[in-house]
Structures are given as structure tokens and as C-alpha cells.
Image 1 (tube, one colour):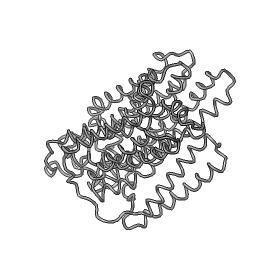
Image 2: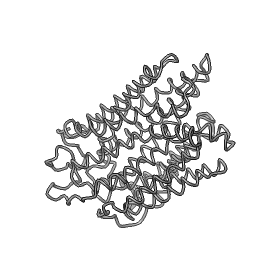
Image 3: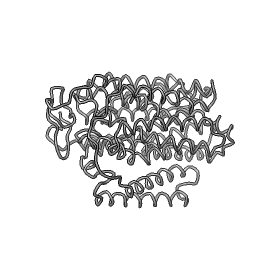
Image 4: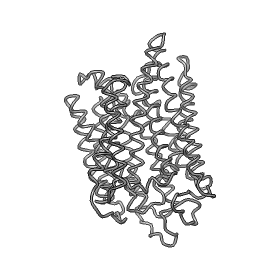
Length: 491
């Protein structure tokens, strides 16, 4: 089965039925001897930026007390990071295509280390929010350039599948490992080390980058579409802010409806701008492939589900089961292990045989089963009987989905578009995660407030009810990936 495209199909290669970079096998450039070392460095950076999205979750009670933070301001510890990350990814992708992916990657590593150190030293809540926002800015640079470097470094389709599987598995485990590491660091060294820990990781990646293969892919010439960047960043930021504020103000309040309407208008203007601009920020040709659009939507839904699971279990394990922060973090470890093993051992073997449509659709449905099990948890269910089966289903689903999703989003494009395609996928994931977690929080709070019972039972009821939202998102995405690939006879 060949991965379909709305405009072209990839030539067959000896490696199996999956698109490469659009070149016949005999035209592929020779493999660089240090390409796997480069993957290790890129993977370390990917793990760091996604780990940072959840590492402070378990530390929120501690840092709130230390900084004298109001309850209404607490979500901004996470939102300030995801707002900057998701809102700037498209711009970062175009910068990577114009300036060079390796340069942008190195700048992102250095900036992320500085911002993380500043966050650890933050004396006030405002200083912490600012540092987290700058982390998001540099995370956008890293995310936009890292996947693009992988797709242009690994010319052999078989090796590219393996590399993207490892990269995707690290992305899937990053969120779960963030909770694990955050719990251990908070109990052992204090919440500030949830930020300090990024400094040695970033410095190690910087040192390792000396041996990375050079970025030989052609760079796109031209100028940045700054008006498009302002419209896209402003629109996405307004939408994410609106959904984040819904928990505090309610869906019908002006602080929610105003940004929601404003964000929709800005994104509509962005779409018009991209059709008319000589050098658009997000070339419309990227969205003419329905399989790619379905993969972007699925990426957003999967990230929303992952963050929802993280929030659900963080509160369930500590509030309902009475676990410590460190024990709660370790409770997420099976999710990381299962996701990694599924992606690297199962995904790479099944993708060439089953194709992307089957892998994405099946993976999303399996992940939905994990959320369904979470929604049925009762206060009497223990970890082994209630939580662990849900983590197993969800981890298998994520691991099955990631490789096909990431390959579909970046396949059959010229090398000079690799940065913006990578940024589009990461932007879809971050924006989907931000909106999804905000909706999940609001739904959980509303359901808990209307529940007649103990505080412990109300908390569980709220999160179990809210789990239906990301569950529905995964099922809708599964339908989309199943239908979008039906464009050619080979699909």
C-alpha cells in the first residue's frame, strides 16, 4: 500500500511501500556516517521540550505556596509555555527553512538553557511566567528544526522510518516522563529543579551537536511573511487564551468570548493572507493533501488526550489514592515504557505492511480504549486494576500512531519545505494540547461542582466525566484518518 497524495505519488523503492523524499532510490544521496549520532542529539532536544510541558504539573502546589501565587494564576505556569510554543511554531518553521535548520536548532538549545535557568531563579510568579514564555519561544525553534533535520538527514526510507519511530516515541514518552521526573525532583530537591534540570540537558545536546551531520538540504530563498506571522501567532494565542480562561471566567464571559471571536477573525485573515502572499508562511499546497490535514488534526487530538490523561492521573493518584508527588510520577512510568516499545519495535515493522491509514486509525482507537477505561474508574479501583490497564491501552495506541502520523505529515515534500511541515505538525499538537487541556479542566470542574458527594468522589467524578471530551476527539480523528486516505486505488 502506498501512502497517497493529492498531487503526486512516491516512486517505489526496495525498502517497501512507503514514500521517501520524492527521489528514486538511485538518486538518494549517500548516508552520512554520523546520522545516528545526530538522531541522538535531536531526540534529546525533543525529549527535553516535551518533557517540559508536564514536568511542573506535580510541582504546582509547591511553587504556588513558595511564590504566593493566586489559584486563578496557577494555570499560567503551563499556559505561558504552551501559548508561546504553539503560537510561534509556524514562524519558527519558516525561519528554519530560510536561515538553516542546524543554525536554528543550535540557537534554540542555547536559548532554552538560559530561559530554564532564569525560571529556576524566578523570585516572583510574574518572573516565572515570563521565563516559561521564553522557554516556549525557544522550544518552537527546536521543534520546528529537529524533525526537519531528521527528514533531510535520513535519505533511505527504511532508516527514516526507524529514525522517526524513535523520535516519535520520545515525543510520546516526554509528557509521561515529565510527570515522573517532576515528582521525583519536587520531593527530593524542590520545584526549582524542575526547571534547572533542562540546563545540563541542553548543554549536553549543544556539545553533542559538534558531531552532527551538516545540514546540506537546500534553503528556501526569500523573506519572512511577517504579516502572516502576526496574524497566525495572534490568532492562535487568542484561541488558546480563551480556552484557558474558560475555567476561571466561564464560557459565556467576555474574557472568553472576546478572545475567542478575535482569534477566529485573525485566523480567517491569516487564511486569506496565505492565498495572496507571494511567499506565504504556511504554503496552501501543504494542505491540499487530505491525508496530511487528517494527520495534523489527529496530532492535535492525540496531544489533547495525552495532556488530559496526565492531568487526570496527577490529581487522581494524589487526591483520591493519596500518593506522594514522587510516587505519582513513578506511576506514569509504564506509559513511557509501553509507548516507546510499541513505537520502536511494533510500529516500524507494521507500517510498511499495513500502511499509514490502518496504523493511525487503529492506534487512535486503541488510545480511545484507554480513555474509556479511565472514564469508568471508581474510588474503589486501585492502581493495578484501574489505572494500569488504561495506561497500557493508551500507551499502545500512542506508540502505534506516532510513526505513521509524523511520516504522513512530512512525506512527499521538497526538502526546502521540511521545516514548515514539521512546524505545522508541532503547532497542531501544541495548540490541540492547549485547547484540549483547557476544555478538559473546565469540564472536570463543572462536573465536580454539580456532584453530590464527598470531595474525593466529586474530584474523580469530574475527571471521569471530562475524559469523554478527549475520547470523542480521538474517535473523530480516527474517522478522519480512515477516510482521508481513500483517494487512490492503492489506499
